[in-house]
Amino acid sequence: MAFRIDPAAPVWQRTTLEPRTAQPPLATDIDVDVCVVGGGYTGLSAALGVASAGMRVAVLEAATIGSGSSGRNVGAVLAQHSRSSPREVIARLGPARGERYNELVADAARRVFALVATHSIRCDAIMQGWIQPAHCPSALHRIRQFHDEWRAFGARVAWLDRGEVADVLGATGYLGGWETSQAGHINPHALATGLARACEQAGARIFENTQALSLTRSVAKWHIGTRHGNVFAREVFLATNAFTDNLWPTLAATLIPVQIYAVATNPVPPDVRAAVLKRNSAVSDTRRDLRAFHYDCAGRIVTGGTLTCWIDARARASRIASRMLEKTFPVLAGKISIEHYWEGLVAVSPDRYPRVNRLAPGLSFAGAYSGRGVAMSIALGEQVAAWIGGKLTDEQMPLPVTPLRALKLHRVAVEVARRIHPYHRIRDRIG
Image 1: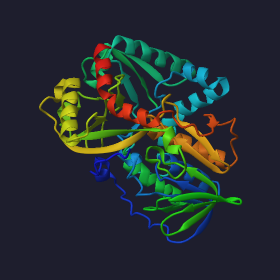
Image 2: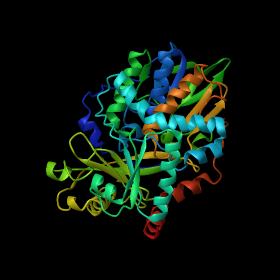
Image 3: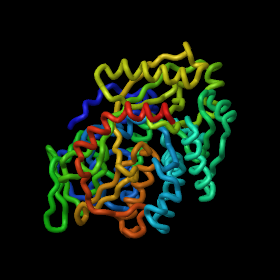
């Protein structure tokens, strides 16, 4: 059930100010306290935390830093649940844990921007908030619930009526919306490479182009086998997310990988840009066939989506995105073209809650952010680091620590996710 991902480099690699030279693969046997498998945001955030606490850490990345989802997403840094409202989270997780998880989500984006500042990561960080406009009356009612509950929770949010949304976004067709000020957007590839640098400065060792091929337990340590060397570790944290393979039995069957595309326009002319996305906020609306957009450092509009059929995907996605942008922002008509295209994967859970799994003593997994990965992966990675280091108990974690539960009919669920896009578009049309 492999995905064929277009290898085209994201626009982010062209605008990363501090290009990274890949570290060499593991070529010997090493002994560490913690081995992190996966060099994306979750793994790097956890590695930074445990290394800063004085533990010996090795990160094994099968490709290069920033080559996976952490360097191929659209770059929105959001402080919002993927589907649930704060009260619904408490009803699901219970008062104590639900409150902790709401606090983590509400503060996740701020944590990212604080991390960027602390480690001087040059990733074009823009903390100008996030706006979610509603495309239909039922969606307007739903996001009003989000706004009211987050406001009661103490989050910095504001309500926008139809006229305010039209003015701030320069968009047509929206009925209103809400915004949170503690959010924004970044260059995701530059954030990944900058986070890797911070890990190395804290003492973590990163081995790129080093795939973990086997994972076995011997006495009090785990043995992680790679092509040219072995890692022996007291704790192993799997942070492979949408790229989870068969390293640990049935782990891949707990996640639904979804293929996505992203595009970037030509730089929008300054006079036109003054009327579109005026605040330079991140924006994503309420459609199931999501419309999301923001500017990059050169004034390009970055957006993305998914397809049912990936034949001739680059041309088809470019046409779809161009039409969508010109319909949403009429002033862009005839002023933009799609200049950059790339693809990636996201990991989705059926209930849209991330997972923290204890797979065996000293072996854990965290991931499945369902499209909210930039902020949540870093925030949850920090929590995992504290948990691995003994500073948090299972009960104190913001999400329940559960054993592995493979999805029933996993292959069917993956195929449904691949083909559900037309249904989402129909539902969007009827409201």
